[in-house]
Image (cartoon, rainbow, N blue to C red):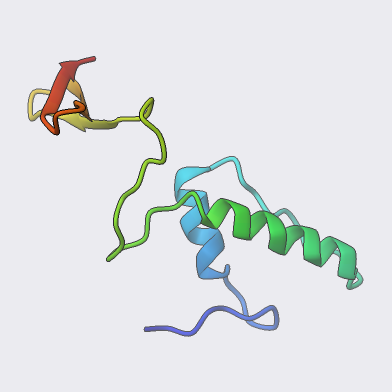
Length: 95
């Protein structure tokens, strides 16, 4: 496993890469010409917040609410939502 990128090394930190995969509008922009501790802390807080939204390999997938569902695509391109009833049965609905 590669070590996380450091500020003095080129490349993005792995958390930013993962967050960008689900939130492509998240752009870091150019680095400031001078170090600003407040700006750095704001950046770290935002990266940590977005990192919580990313599913990690080897962890359970918890959507966090009964109003959320998984969307699956069939080979012919149809979209299907998958939910669970109170009895534990899977409910598949065409979208």
